[in-house]
Image (cartoon, rainbow, N blue to C red):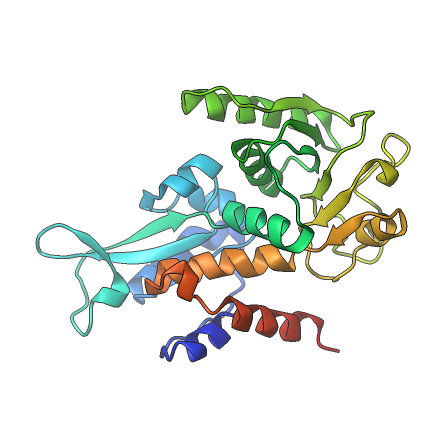
Length: 286
């Protein structure tokens, strides 16, 4: 996805994948900094760990509480920090890691574009209270959903997330326009959003307890999982007459924002269509 975008923009850059165990994440970040990487992405379980390891945090990372994108920056003589891409041949003596979060923005764009869901005033059931669920819950609340029903395998984690959502909006000095609760609603909702990992493996069960909530109560279902393209949850939702979408759009849009952060390209100039085609070919090609 990123390599296709680099080629489209004529950049002599390369995006590579490295497997890093959580115990060696700090060493990996320091290594990337020492090798003067322009930036990098982090996936689970590193997003929460990196939050406490980077040298600086963007407002997006501070608010969402996780880091999925890092830009490495160098200090110029005058003390200003600039992206490493700004330094031609002279490598700066001092380099820092600057953490961002692009997941929340990617999710909101994908929900609107791939499902046609307008979050303002919507009623939402959110499945999962882990790292992805936390980011999703905060983004949904910020976007002005009317109701947010938090569901998790262990109820205490859902209750913790409820407190996080309320506290986050209190810190920003305004009351949320959203009614947040734990558990399934009895009424119909506009969206069911899966932020759990259930569905990645063929043997996985559904993240939704249909003895407590029927898919016929939902107008649309979004699964943040993008492989397989159709999870068991999405297949059941489609059979129940719901509009459905997987997480490919979120993957692409969070990547587009990361591309913008690393390269300095304005979002409207990021080759999103090229990135999406490359992602589809890579992930779903037989």
